[in-house]
Structure formats: C-alpha cells, structure tokens
Image (tube, rainbow, N blue to C red; front, side):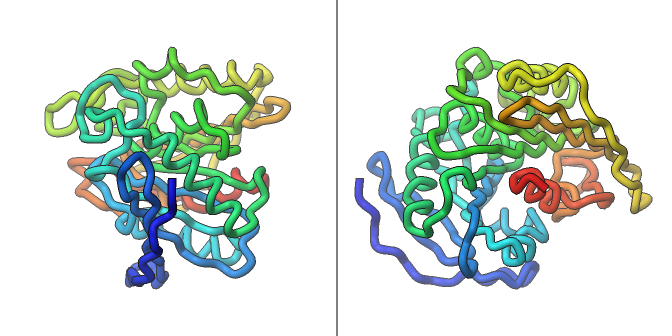
Length: 294
C-alpha cells in the first residue's frame, strides 16, 4: 500500500465557513478520497461518514456545528468518501457498488485511521467514528471489526439484520445511537429499509440493537434516563438513556417524532421524504460529549 500525492485543493462550504483539504489514499487498488478539516494541536480524531447517495463534502454541511465544536475541542475531523456514494456496511442486499463488489471499506477506514493517527500523533484511545444511515451502519461494522476506533455513534441507523450474526467485536466498545421514532427509511421498530418503495435490506429494532450492544459490552441491567429539554416547538422531543458497562458505555437518544435526520443539522430533504429534523438538541454536540467522556 502507498499513500498517493496529496492534492492540496480547498473546498469552501459557506454554511459552516470551514476549509477542508482533499486527499487520496491508495487502498485495495483504488484511489480513495477523503477530506480533512485541519485543527491546531489535535488531541483526538473523529471520522464522519455520509449516508447512501451522499458525499463527504455534503456531510460537512449536514452535520452542522461539528467543525466549530472540533476547533474548540482540538478534534481532527475526517470525512471519507464511499465508492459511488455508498459503503459496504455488511448488508446482504446488493443495493450499491460497494456492497455488490464487496469493497473492503472496513479495511480502508481502519488503515486510514491508523495512518492519520500516526501522522498527527493522535492517542490510540482518541479515535472515533460516526455516521448517518448507511454511514451509521458502516460505523457499526467498524465497531465489530476495527483495530482503530474506540467508540462509535450511529445516527438514523439500527444494526443491520443480516450482519448481526457476523458481528463479534474483540473488545468492549462504547456505542451511541441517535434514532428517530418516525424514521420513514430505517424503521425504529425494525424491518425493511425502504426508499421510494424499494427495499434496501433489513434492520433490527432499536430495542434489539441496543440489547445486542449491551450484551456484548456486559452492561448493567439498570440505566439512567433523562429528558432533553423541549427547547423548540417542532413536533419532536427527546429522551436519553445510558447504561454503564465497565470499560464501555451504551447510550440511546430517542427522538420522539424525529425522522431520518441529524438533529440540529441540515434538513437535507423535505419532511415528506425523510421526516423531521429535531431542533431540541445538537447531535454534533452530543456525539462529541459522548466520545470525549463529558
């Protein structure tokens, strides 16, 4: 494997006024693209994965607020690009090039994380990954297989049903889920993932997903439950539930009335397609707090 010459072009996004540098890493016979938002004296690193049909640059806009938080907290942000806008998250339904060609996205993301951690001198216990939808499912695959990532946050993505029996993490790993109860694409109660009447695999229910990770992490049966203040009258509300698991944590933020969206982020498609984006809290803030142990 060799690292290709870095292409130092800048991508300016007016919505967050952040400059991201574009790079390539040759992996598996492909030139894999990724964006980095530089930060002075980085102390930790977060990979942010777009959803199916998305782009790395668009994810910077969708997850609003994250670059500003990262600057304050000295977090290096990395936005990888999937093959043909998709990730091989382990589903058995051939709905994308990445899945059909069995692209080794887990290996790519793991290798990239280890390379950047060495380049930027990031501590090995400060490497995290998050994503929405297909990116959230890919984050869960990394929780099952990764050598690099120490915690994940999955937004609008339950555990993929066909992949669950193959998921055998070698160590405890902290997991955060932010899930909308009225997600029209990835159903909170489990079942078929659907978009424009096309089935794109199946997921476990939110309860079964949380039970899977609580069991793996050997969590306590009791949890701590809190209500997130209903700050905006937008027909959504949110509650949080956290389980202590010794060397890991499992946390669910349940967005009542929330859709297939990033709370506090961009309403990237109409509500009739993806549901509501809650404005009661910022998913970006909650994810950073979870990763850094606040």
